[in-house]
Length: 259
Ligand SMILES: NC(=O)c1ccc[n+]([C@@H]2O[C@H](COP(=O)([O-])OP(=O)(O)OC[C@H]3O[C@@H](n4cnc5c(N)ncnc54)[C@H](OP(=O)(O)O)[C@@H]3O)[C@@H](O)[C@H]2O)c1
Image (tube, rainbow, N blue to C red; front, top):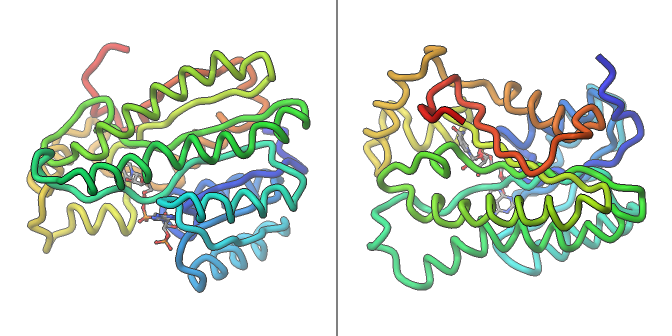
């Protein structure tokens, strides 16, 4: 199936490894040129070189920390140098795990800036050029815990719930500009981050809940980052031209709600 991505420009944040890397790699495999970002330069450049070598697409790497306005501005300046983007994938890290009331105002502010304000800043920055190019697609990566909260994930649940809110709002406001906004909620995905959270030696907050969750996945396994990438790439592509404002769990069937 031709996803009609040849020659499109995609910005993928948090793309040096894990889910973001898998999305960037798949978009490039489908013909998109990339601008990828993360904080650690060596890993980011290595990811860019690997994707470029595998796909022959242009892959530009920009170091930036999404938790700060400066970091978002650095990434956005590079996007503007490229003449704008057709696709934006908002992906990155996540705030710490722990009991919600144990975090002080500073931690809450940082979580807000990391998970929600970074998404607003990136979208605000790319939209004018995206609209001028005739439209585009924005895909946000949150987590299943946003739809089905678990103890100790309060910082992420609360701030990503805001991402669901802004995504739906923007699907209404940007639809007339032919810009679509959708959000994915991955379940348990086999990445380095997941190993940190629920690895065999981890006894950190969230571990027991995640171990229980793993046992109840109908498909009986964690997801592969490529399985998130396949869905994200479809939503980013013109083939999903009538899909906007959706929130989609990609979770091996673990969520128990009807819709
Ligand atoms: N893995 C799962 O089971 C799972 C499930 C649901 C949701 N998620 C969410 O999906 C997202 C990606 O998860 P993952 O498992 O792929 O994580 P990962 O393997 O740790 O990769 C995270 C990527 O984001 C970058 N990053 C982290 N913090 C950043 C920041 N402040 N600014 C810019 N880049 C940053 C990392 O590079 P640098 O460290 O160099 O910045 C890396 O490239 C996270 O938000 C995670 O919470 C993951």
